[in-house]
Length: 302
Image 1: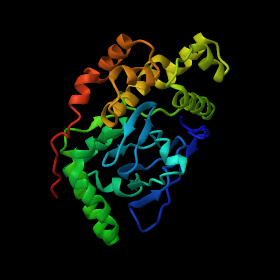
Image 2: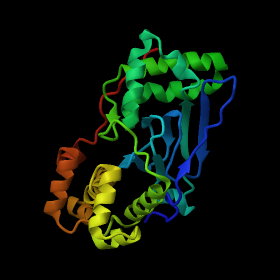
Image 3: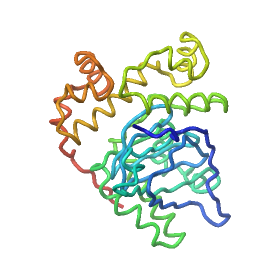
């Protein structure tokens, strides 16, 4: 089960700024990632080098793993929450992430040149939240951490080269289907935090609409309108996406049968599980398991 400290309070981060730096580099090597929903004005490029779990980006749930790369636009709400064993204190696993933050008062000013149109287009797409899976960013796993060993001027030059290379990759996966980030009011943030927390803690069992609506003190009908207006999807869609994302992980990381995974993810009907899995992933659980071999790797050349 997921712990109850997941996304209890909304956070608007102020990324540390320096008057003589265009980039803010951050290397986190911690017992688990920061696990509260937050956003910040700066654009964020992050490489996960250790740790697995579930993310919520712009209201969209999903799985993250070592080697994944994420590009998040300005003010896109997000959280990377490690799996439970990162909290148990028994195995003492490590979570590690390399991140570069940059904003309108720094690097973005230089990207107005016509030669950087490809990068600007990529950053515009980043308002949906973008993801590169593990094998598709092999070169970045070496190049991004190397920034820490360069001078500030070389960091900017090297990072621009990375952005140029990344802008030529067609395998970015938009996390959200919408162009703009979710920016709910503060009170709505608190309600959404409570709802996301509840889903993460309870998706492995049947969930009734009435009990979810009661969490935010709304009638079921009013709750359905509230959730759809602020996430652009129904609560049932969000719950199914969370369950199917967890099932995808189990199909790859365990040898449990599809029926066992179906029930472990909160479904009580195998036919419905298969139907929802195909709707969300475009394939069946069996084919997903068979296709779990690594995709072709993409090289980033300077």
